Length: 400
Image (cartoon, rainbow, N blue to C red; front, side, top):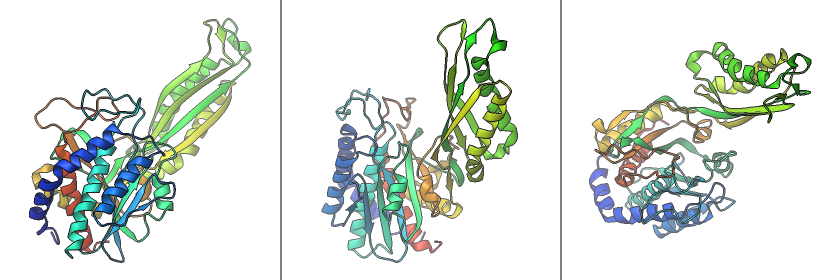
C-alpha cells in the first residue's frame, strides 16, 4: 500500500513509548465525563495535548469541540471522534470510575477521543520528518448523543472545508480487541422519533358507541401502522417502526379523553428515510380516521443513515489489514442504531468501522449504553494503528 510500508516499525516504537500515556488520557476522560453540548474541559484537554505536540488546533465557536489540521495540501482527509458521555450511573469498581453523578462514558467516546489524540500526535511526528504526504484534519465533535447533535455544528464551523474523504471508528464490544469490522454501503440506520396524540370526548366504558373509544384507537395505531408501513416500503429499505411508550386513561371503567403513543422510525435507505415523515403521518391519519378520534402527529427528525462509500471502505479495509493483519478484518453487521457521523457522509464520501473492544478469550461483553461498559485498553493502540495507516493510504491513493 503506497505510503504505508515505512510506518509499522516507527508506529510500534512510538506506541511502545507513549502507550501508557494514552491509556492515562483515556482514564482521565472516563473519570471526568461531560454531557452533550457541554464538553468544555474535554475540548480543553484535547487542545493542550495537540498544542504540546506542536500542532495548531482551534476551538469550535462554543468552545466544546476542536478542529486541527496537520500537514499541507489542497485536499484534506478528515477523521472524527466524539466527546460526550451518557446520562447513566457508572457501575464499575475501577480506579477511573466516573467522578460525576449519573454521567459516564458508556459508548466509548473516551476511547474514540484518545485514539484521535494519539493519531494526531503520531502524525505530527511524521509531518516534522517530512513523511506526511498531504493534509489531515482531526474533528473532535460535541454532542453525538443528543438531538440536535453536534455534527452539523462541526460542518458549520468549516470542518469539511476542502475535505475529500472522512473516516471514523466506533467501539464494538462484540468483537475482541485486535479485530475490526468493516462494511461497504448501509452501516447504521436513520433514527427518527414519532409521537401520536389522540383526543376525544371521553365517556363510560359501558357506552363506547357514544364517544370515540381512544384506547381502541391507540391499539389500532400501535398494531396497524407498522403493519401497513411494511407493505408500503420496499423491504430492502430496512424500515422499522417500533413503539416504546403508550399512555391513556386512569380508571378501568372510563374511556379517556386523551392518549398518546411514542416510538422510533429506523431506516437503512437514504431515499426511504426522506419519504418516511410524510408516509408515517399519512398512515396514522388514515388508521385513526375510522375511529372518530382527533389525531396530532409529531414526527421529529433524528439522524440520517450511515452509508459507507465503496472506495473509502476499501481504503480503510486495506489499511486495517496492513495495520493488524488481513485475518483481523471481518465483515461488520448492519446496525439499526443511529450515528450522526451520517451528516458528514451527506456531504463527502467516507466510512465508519467497528473497533473491537472486548477482552480476547473472555465471555464477558460490556455492552454499549450500559452502566458497566468498559473496554480492553489494548484497543487504543489498535485504533491508532488502523487510523494512521488509513491516513497515509487515503493521502497516497489519489482516489479522492
